[in-house]
Length: 284
Image 1 (cartoon, rainbow, N blue to C red):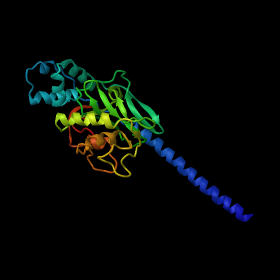
Image 2 (spheres, rainbow, N blue to C red; image 1 turned 180 degrees about the vertical axis):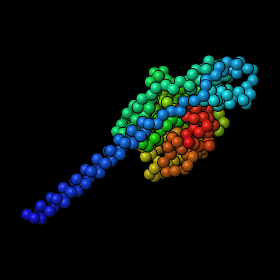
Image 3 (tube, rainbow, N blue to C red; image 1 turned 90 degrees about the vertical axis):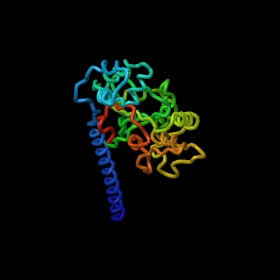
């Protein structure tokens, strides 16, 4: 009888210990969520100016481009891309968004997991997108871990983006509505010729859709197989994979698991547009 009583106490002690660990873990995760919600996108602390005189000039100077960057988040690539299309008004709309400081909310889509989204229903304005561009945002997190999200532009004219959506949803093509309500993002353009950028986009459409999701894709086993697309993927991994097929490694730290931030910091890209980040620091 004493042996049974002792065994019961041991089992009860183990149960209480494990239960305590679970409770502590849940408290830590919830505290992490609260800490993550303290994040906020950057908004200019300086005055908005009238850009009409600059945009009416026949040729822009380096100083003009710098002013436009500080006022809109558009680099020379972003400005020229819109001017070539005769879309000066779009630059002014981007300036309005850049200074607006729109309200946003946390949209939970899993346990201790959520994304921030703007309450502005139609979202903010983008630079002119081109095939091969990458859009990266920090506004997705699990508890206090802000891992972000990214997509590959496969149809610049119509805003088609390759996206690894999440569990129970295979990778596929989405529209810009999945990104233009993010309170912070970077639009990046590969430092590759146009033919290569288009080839990356075409490969992604033909070979990287319909793939299942795994948050640890690339962590176990080989990350890249030039003879076959991956069996599972995640948002940063699938974008990285598309470029690796053409010998371009956009993982800035070469770690075991490629994340959106790793892509954002890669020197394989030029910046096209910044929104919700300090233009001097970007995703530091």
